[in-house]
Amino acid sequence: MTTSPTGDGGIDPAVREELDRLRNSIDNIDAAVVHMLAERFKCTQQVGHLKAAHQLPPADLDREARQIARLRTLAENAKLDPAFAEKFLNFIVAEVIRHHERIADATANGTTTNTTVTTAD
Image (tube, rainbow, N blue to C red; front, top):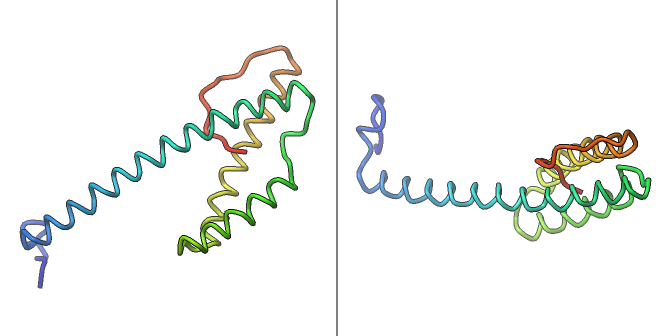
């Protein structure tokens, strides 16, 4: 047995070292994901302003369908559950649309929007 019922004190030092190594990698990956999403959201913010300036709709159902199909294929190739990947993209797209609608409303009303965004296109 590698653990004790009283907590971490009973973990074999070699197991603790491996656990710490893996958790450090997970922490690094999480940081990279956050930074990649932030960069993606900066781009979608620009898309929202471009759409608003040209009175284009916040949602693009054809693009969304293409993106879902593309992401599902990427997920399959990466051995990631495609249904999970689709749910993740749908969450992001819903947030993007919400922000694009906000940008469109602000543009129509002649007001400005907050540039800190958590959206994707």
